[in-house]
Length: 295
Image (cartoon, rainbow, N blue to C red; front, side, top):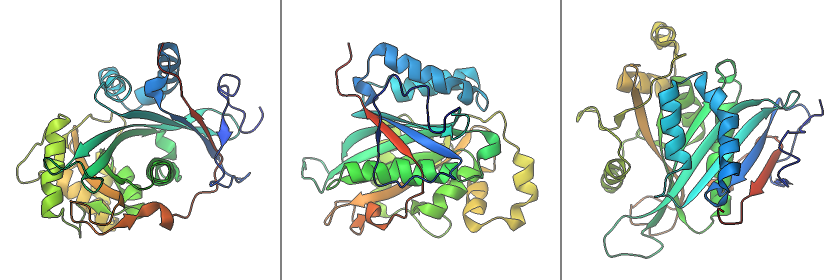
C-alpha cells in the first residue's frame, strides 16, 4: 500500500500544510478536517463512522454516542473540526481528536476584542498500545493548539478540556501551561470565567473541595492499579492528576490552557503568543476545508 495514500484522497482535495515538514521516517500522518458544521449530512456521518470503531475500543457504546452527539451535532458552537491520525504504512486510523469552538465574553456589556474569547473544547482517542508513542503530544500541542492559533491570529484563544487518563495529562502538561497544576493555581478572575463556562456547558463538579474534578466518561481499558503501584516513580504532574481524581472511574480533571492572549485581556493574564514558540513535529499534515453550507 502506498505511503500517505489515504482512502479519503479520492473524496477530498487535500492540501499539504507547509509549516509541518514531513519526515519519511514518521510512523504516522494527519488528515485535518476544518468546519464540519458546513459539511453535508452524508459527509459528516461518513467521517463519524470512521472514528467510532476506534472509540469503542476504549469506551462504552452509550458514551461514544453521547460524545459524538456533543461534538458533531452541537448547535451552540461556532466551529467543529476533526483530526485523524493514520499509520504511514497501513493508512489505518490510530487516533483522532474532535473539537468545537465557541465565542464567549467575560465581562458584561463589553464587546471589545480584549474581552472576547474563543473557547475550544476537544476529545481525543488513541489506540492503547500507542499512547506513549508521541501521538497525544502531536494531536494536542501541534494540531489542536498550534494549528488553531495560527489560523486565528489576533484573538484570545483558550482551551477548556478534561483529562481522563494520566498518560494524556502527562503529555499535555509537558507541552502546555496548564491551570491548575501541581505548581500553578487558577487566578481569581480566570476562576470566575472557568466556573461560568463549566456551568454553561453542563459539566458536573463532584466536590466543592476539588472544583476542577468533574464527572466524566469511564475508560473500559484503563489499568488504574498500574499507576497506583508506580506512584512514587511518576512526575509531579501525574501525581497531581492522581491526587485529584483518585483514578476513580468516571472522574476527570479539567484544565485550562492559555494559548493566545492579547495585551490588556480582561482575564489579566500576560500577553501570550503560543504559536510563536513552537517546534513542530516532522509530520505530514493534509487538510481540507468544508466551505459550502449543509444541504
